[in-house]
Length: 240
Image 1 (tube, one colour):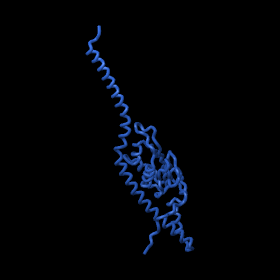
Image 2 (image 1 turned 30 degrees about the horizontal axis):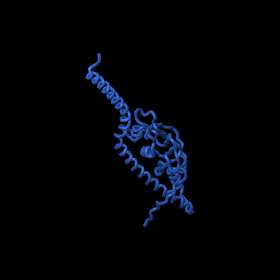
Image 3 (image 1 turned 90 degrees about the vertical axis):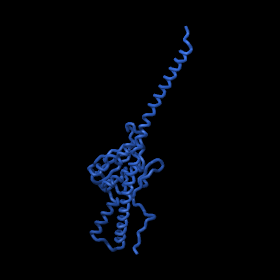
Image 4 (image 1 turned 60 degrees about the vertical axis):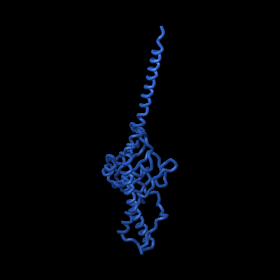
């Protein structure tokens, strides 16, 4: 006995609707992890922008201070060359300026910050480390009282540029490769506290899939800066 045509048509329609429903569920579930991964960083963009502006202000202030110290060092060294000599107090001050300007190796307590892509970000897509990430961390450490700093063994100052070039990062004119290691001499507790602020710069990096590890060290050794940076445009202001 054959089924009536209407019953066969209803059975075919039911099968078709079941297949369409199954495909819709599969498609929705496949999009969910990607949506979660891409939505998470967006809510932090405004906070990160504010932090970047604050750190840029601090960096500019430090750069002006370093330029003032460099001018004084050149004046003292010129006086010694011309035979006028330096008093013992001026010689000590010159040594202090050379220390501040990174012209001699230094050592002391501090922190070591390791930065790399986080492959186990837990739902967040791993993010490559950019030049502004290292620059922001360096500014955080300067603001927290760092007295000397190096990135992957390259001594850096407030005026040292960190940039991307040919798919890699450069500190000054020297290339550096991941994982990136920032070593700063100063009060370890103060620098750790600054990097651990909830909602701060480090939290922002971790939210976008960058792994940041901070570890205090009882003794850190930093080399002298690799040569001096010539001033091609800045000139001493004349006094009239």
